[in-house]
Amino acid sequence: MSQRETPSVLSAPDAGPVEEQGHRSMLTQRRADRFAHVEPKGKRVYTALQRAEMLVDDGSFVAMTPLRSAGAGQGSGVVAGWGTTDGHPLVVVSHDAAVASGAIGAVMAESIQKAQRFAIDKGYPIVYINDSGGARIHDGIFALHGCGGIFALNIEAQKRIPQISLILGPCAGAAAYSPALTDWTIMVKEQGQMFLTGPDIVKAATGEDASAEDIGGSDLHTRVSGVAHLEVDSEEEAFHATRLLLSFLPTHKGGAQKRHSSVPANPGAVERLPGIVPEKSSIVFDMNAVIDGVLDNGARLELMPTHAPSILTLFARLDGHAVGVIANQPNARGGILDSKAAVKAARFVDFCGRFDLPVVTFVDVPGFLPGTVEEGRGIITHGAKLLKAYVETTSPKLTVVVRKAYGGAYIAMGAASLGADVNWAWAQSEIAVMGPGGAVALLHRRALKEAEEPTVLRDELAAVYREEVARPYLAAEAGIVDDVIHPEETRDRMTAALRMLTAGTD
Image (cartoon, rainbow, N blue to C red; front, top):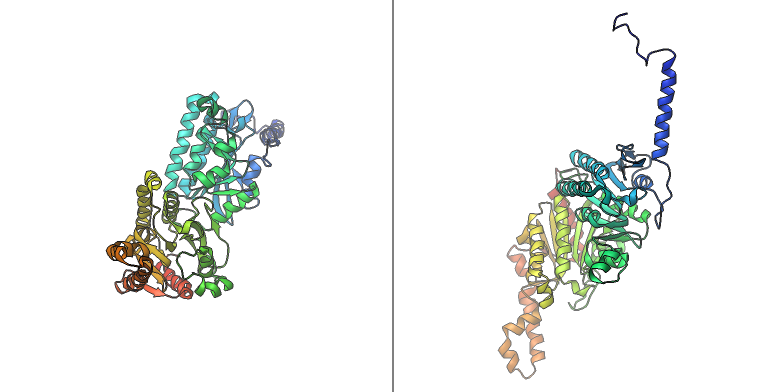
């Protein structure tokens, strides 16, 4: 019989069905072994696979290389794959704490990098569900090399796709750097922690007796350090917040913006808008009331709400367009800009610029916070970062001065000189190098010193300065402010401008 006529073993009438059944059984068993349910430990409720499936649309998750193994019958330590959220593609990387406590070994790092590379090349957002004890000690240099590869792809991805990190367990050592290289980090209260060195090492090195929550809990990082950007109470809330955040973002830089139907602003807020700002600049009010009266009445997501609260950063919609909103908050330290607020604002504006989201700025700023403490914190450098972010952002920029805008802080809050496309000022607002009180104290120092009633004279001079110098008409006449408007006209003006600035881009 010739070689061509020799029947293969697989085509033998008797052997084929038996071997086929054996292979089917083997695959079924391997899948059963690999995906056997391991009850989550500690405060965890769900497995790595369940977390990935809960994040995406029902039934849409597909695992990449699900049979990849790190040896000894273990999985790779991560569940990576793709799915959709509201029909839009998404890549998910979910640490498996059931395998070596989620420690990042060489095989796990390769699996993560494969998912990252796929997301970058296809232009899909990526969500990292972090629950890891850090680099796997047994893998030594290979674990560290793998972690470095993940970080490098985090940085490459910054130029191309949105990256979101969820901290659902400990995130220690090398594992903490990847979330810091992503765009937004969400932490579950009393469950997720981020730190470079854990309590035992801290105590050995410094003598400090601190818990994991003290060193890297969600309160520390969302309120004090600013390392994380949103604290939630449960994993379900983390998944919901992630899906909401993604609803405002394109899948990649240069991708189509997600448009919704235009929804009118909140009727009650619109009605209150003309009288929302107190006549006295020293009286505080909530800038959210202004935002409610201007933007679409619908879903919003504020990021970093408890960190540097004198500045608001949130995603919302205007005329159906997803927009990034940045605003001074008079309710918190008068809306002043300090180092933390400047960094927070700059980061937000930079993100919006990278993904072509329009930036809407509401201004009521008394200036940068003075003093040796802030100067020591490098407020000059941090304020400069905010200037740079506005200048480099090429997406539409709309700015309205609601009450006051003094000194360098006026410029830093999206002024025309930094490239804002359209600027408005409310009729009662003030724009000046400094507030009337400070200005007359310098300009009329001698007269005030010689006056019999210096307080009365100062108030009179301040009133003249306010009306003749600080009111926005001088800026409007010079073309620096495009128009002076009534508060209730703001939405229509912004909507018309945004339509023109985005025409042909949808």
